[in-house]
Length: 426
Image (cartoon, rainbow, N blue to C red; front, side, top):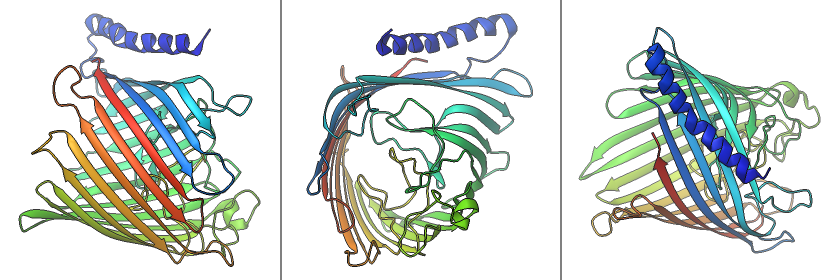
């Protein structure tokens, strides 16, 4: 049976869940569907990565993605139970060269289509919620899923969040596998540059609202046999003149543990003088002033220690919670110092729904290998538009261009064009 038929069957099965749950509600008095939500997201993406030098082929691909997200309500009682379902499918429309959007076929090319469905059970007591299963999409300083291609990256494991105390959110979790943004399988976890997969990433921490204008965060994370990491951050908002000044401070302290600390083969971290051992401190500050429809930002980030920044990276695309995580590069190399400048403008007064953003980063003083350079820069340009009315209302269009010039990596120009639309089913 073709995968398109499989994907259609999956979608039909997921859409049938609310109907079955409604019948259960009427017969047993459960509130399973009281707060149920279901959306179907469409994403059409054209990607063009033009490598300016080196032997690697250009990365060009065009595809259509479908993401069906069903989130049930909870059954009644002291402990409420529910179910989340995340089904997704990607269809190849075209590709050339070495593409990164689709899984590879047996000949090293791109498969015509790929699909996956994940289930996560959940339970809720008061203001505390637990989710266990697959299709989890964390967005935390110590672990953030990547959503830069046709379909998002997901994790399997357990996530607990609690809001029992006013102005305080506590979080605890463990992941054992990840599914890449161009994958239909789940694999063990990796540190960038390593080869040995592990099945335990743990984190704990929280966010505290300290007054009306300050949020402080602390998290601890550990990837088995690789690294342990402390994160401390704060976001402060200050009324200044006719606008607002937003200060975003972040600090990571990452060290080795287990096999990485012992120097075992395969459990290595990127760096120059670290002998494969995790040893990194990342400190950054970003100041953004917003006035009317304008936003102007200036930031600085410094890496210290002998290894690159440590974060979950299975090799198929990953996101690091750094002010320098950009369209192409992350500026996370050992010893790297990076300046960041940003400007954004919302055309709401002229063309409602139209937004523009520009970002420039310049990194220096990092070590790659003896005799090689130590500087790089990237420029990002982005134009977003959401149709405000008519038949195409809520259709999103995003045009993104980036240029990277680096002494440590291949120079690249990259273009992305996104067309997005969400159907609200429930």
